[in-house]
Amino acid sequence: MPALFSLPALAGAATYLAEAQSVSLDAVGDDHEEELESFQSAIEVERLQPGFNDLQLETQTDLSASQLRLPELSSKRQKCDHNELFENLKVASQGVVCVQTRQEYQRSASQRLFSVRLLTTVDARLWQQFTEFCAELQFVDDPEDIDKSFPNFPKELPTWIAVWIMNRCDEIDIRTGTAKGPKADRVTYNMGQKMRAAMTHKFARDFGLGTQLWTENPLLPGKFHGNPSLSVAVSQYMISLRRRKVRAGETVTSARAIDEPTMRALWEFNTNFEQSEAGPVSKKRKQEHPEQWAGYNVRVMLHALYLTSLLCLLRYDEALRVMWSDVHFDKNRDGIFRVRLLLPFRKTHQHGGIAPFVLYPEPNKPWMCPIRAFAKWSDTCKQLGIPRSGYVFRKKIGNNMVSANPADAMSSEGFLECFRNNLLDVKIDPRPYGTHSFRRGGCQYLAMVLRWPFRNICSWGGWAPNFDNPGTLFKYLLSWTDTPLVEREDYFNPNRAGTDPCNACGRTCHCG
Image (cartoon, rainbow, N blue to C red):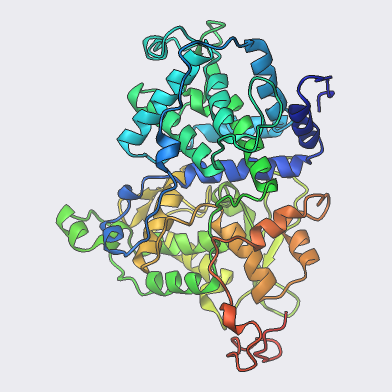
């Protein structure tokens, strides 16, 4: 961590920097994952199967008129020290990203989908606010100068985006670094995400820059290319802003956890799906049968992937990178079949040393049985003539086939689209769910269904050796987005219905 330098005139910003330096690297990685999750979860729902239109879904927006209204600008420009302004931004963001997380940015940026498309009028208004803001602070002479600078955008553009969001969302005054007054306008972190999404959409679509990471051209120093909204500077600031908003008591939306009833519904639908030979599906049949987005073979693979991520508490990218050489079938001393996952690396263990994940059958709950899932997928691969080498979870080809190329793994975008289509099959709104839903659901399943002690969950998930951030576990266990387990009137109800019988002792009480 860099040394804390003296900031005599920026007391509020110095406090933020001190807090950032006390955060562990594990917490930094978790915050980064949450930012990527919210970014990837914004995939356009319109791409999903037509069945989405048949669901009765709640719609809401927190884009109030006051948030979309252009800020009042003084006719006289205020003098602004740009160097001091950028120093304030550095103080607010410093210490947020370690080298490992910075590399994760570069690896993940190429896999991202740009954030959810906002209404065109909303994008236009936010873009206008941004350009007017840059002109007010004398970053540019005229608001139109930013558009005119394409394709040679200034290298400071990501900093301008971060400062613009800071001005609306954060607690410090961007000019002085001191806390804003109680009457000062502040918007939520979710609104800050929408502001960034509008920038991402503008640069990705209107300027045609896509989702490439904002980087300097190695052949032309001083020249940058890519999407300025997907720069490290903007990502650093958004992560630091999110932490401060949470500490201040603001509710920040996370992906909803997958629970056992949902896993059962998915398993029943996929298992009972009509088996047919792999082949093309006509457009007419797709329109008449929206569930034909995937055939039986693909669904077998997906359920094995779901259980792998959920039971082993794996990040989505870790589960997608599991290879057949990592999967070992054997028996224990009692003759019980089991699966041993020997992963060569994880995000927190880049150089190996990972304890194996040993999974056993679950005969009473076939929808939660990893042995059945892996055996079924292995047998399906054999029937399709696909060698059981390379990646276990392959890219979907057509609707009922997967790639035969051992190196052709399913992408995170492909996984998310399949997962959300699968939720639509069972009439579940897919929008609250994302790629972290299985890791969150796994923690809740181990704690509240299997009733594991927290110590065992930490050890199983790989958090035990240096678990200095207990908020990670509780963040997965508790979230307002998750389905409530108990109705409010039943907490003390003496006649409350019992739970499913415990497989070990047969009790149906709510202890644990």
